Length: 129
Image 1 (tube, rainbow, N blue to C red):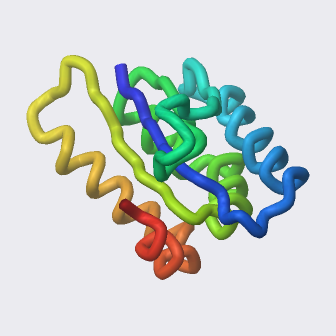
Image 2: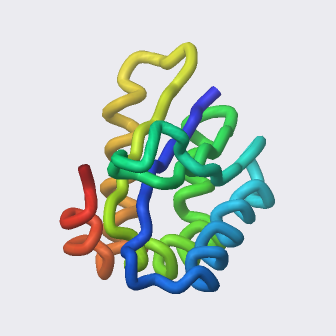
């Protein structure tokens, strides 16, 4: 089992309607083949925290992760949503990992990031924590 978690906060200038659209698109990840579940929720650590929301995507493993990352629904949502964020942190949690899984996931992210998200690179670096 693999859990893909993104903690994030919107830029203050982003109107509620656009924030809602980003969340709607992220919740749509549940319809991607290989995704077991995808949900966005409010972080509840308190008002002084850096992040206001979190996305949790559940899938079986590495093969499904690669398909999710390259899926047009995910690509379009990232291209629409990431520029609206002021802060973002990503973590992948793998249950019962096979040896080398961290390196393979990093390679998937690097390859697909260069292929699909190169235009977001500078912004993603600026908001990553």
